[in-house]
Amino acid sequence: MGQEIRDSHFSEADFRRFRDRLAAETALLEAWLEAGLLDDGEPMAGCELEAWLVDDAGLPAPVNQSFLEALGDPMVVPELSTFNVELNTEPHALEPGFLDSTYRALDALWRRCEAIASGLDAHMVMIGILPTVQKSDLCLENISAMQRYRALNEQVLRMRDGAPLQLDIRAAEHLQTLHHDVMLEAATTSFQIHLKIGAERAGRAYNLSKMVSAPMVAVSANSPFLFGHDLWDETRIPLFEQAVAVGASDYSRRVTFGVRYVRESIFEVFAANRDRYPVLLPQLMDEPVEGLAHLRLHNGTIWRWNRPLVGFDDEGRPHIRIEHRVVPSGPSPQDVVANAAFYFGLLRELLDTEPDPEGRLPFEHCRENFYRAACRGLEARVRWFDGREGTVAELCEQRLIPQARGGLVRMGLAREEADHWLGIVAARVSRRRTGARWQRDWVAGHGRDFPGLVQAYRERQESGEPVHRWSA
Image 1 (cartoon, rainbow, N blue to C red):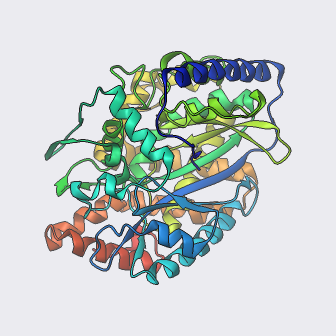
Image 2 (tube, rainbow, N blue to C red):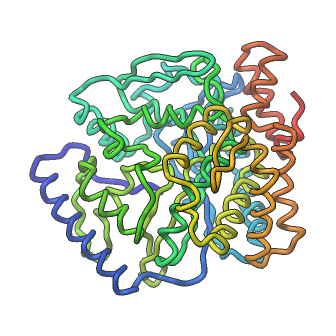
Image 3 (cartoon, helix red, strand yellow):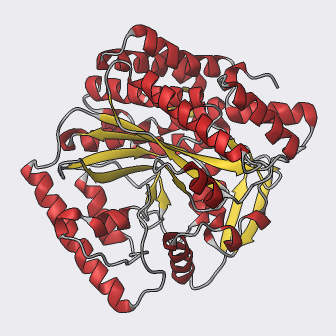
């Protein structure tokens, strides 16, 4: 959940004092890591699900303030636009039954949200990009009532010297347009997977999270349409990267896959935050240095597709979490939990069985795999360990899904639980039926009636069935 701030206007003195506090907190984190003071206990899992509010015609419904007031649940919070919200789950230990428990909690929360939305003549939709959203919807009149978001818009435009943001996405079709605020970001909704992990293994887990980003984005792709254009399988990736573009190089882009693997310690990422990224929101906070408040706020304005976070438990002990951000929202509660199962299982298996994954998959291939998979989905050709080549679908069927199953069993899950959730991913892959493919199949049969597409999508989502069972 994003930190709120008090102000949206800042002075040069604010930036200077913030940088001083950021430097002090970064040095303290380094000392904690070197002394082994971060929590090294059992891994924990959590997730955030971003969703849309739409009206009966399938158009964005900017009613999140009324919705949140009626719901009154701290686990559901506003997002950038007034037609988006974010659902959060309580963290679970990675133990037998945790996937089933996560699903039950998320499904129950989703149904409660849908009931509240219906009282406002609205509906909930989990989808990477809503096909009916228009540029005119993505305006400051529809920004959520939080200082954080208004300040973000002001500071991004300040860093661009007032120049508009340029959107340029090439695929079978080409979308090119200008936008004058950061609200383009509101068109991207995701399912963010969190893994708390010991500091000693955090660097390797971070690198592996980058490696598995290609298969993860391919099996979960759910964002083919934007402003009437048929673009990437997961158009959310280039859209978000361009929506807050303030860096001139790969070393300073705010939304990034990164430039290399971690070599020695996860601290390298926080050192890069301090050294390479200009402060965006210099909100000064009256908190002790041990709270790392400025470090955490600054880290929250750098949207790596895999982002390390520092959190604190109820007793105030710090820990590292990896936030895996490549997966879009939807298509169903079952689908998103299955995506989490694939990530947790595959990561665990590779952590335990691969002594040198960085040596077997060079970073440049890892990054190229990610963008190919985001563009072409399951049919993207990628290079895996030791130069092995093939489509993502072939890689998943022959190696990755069995490895993920082994990782879940290694955690102690019953084979029945592992088979159930990975069976959803396997069926999706074998039928080549991702959310992106379902949307394109529907359009192929019914034409570019995007309100009709949203209505058909919402009806199938309400069934609770995973997308591989949806009819086009």
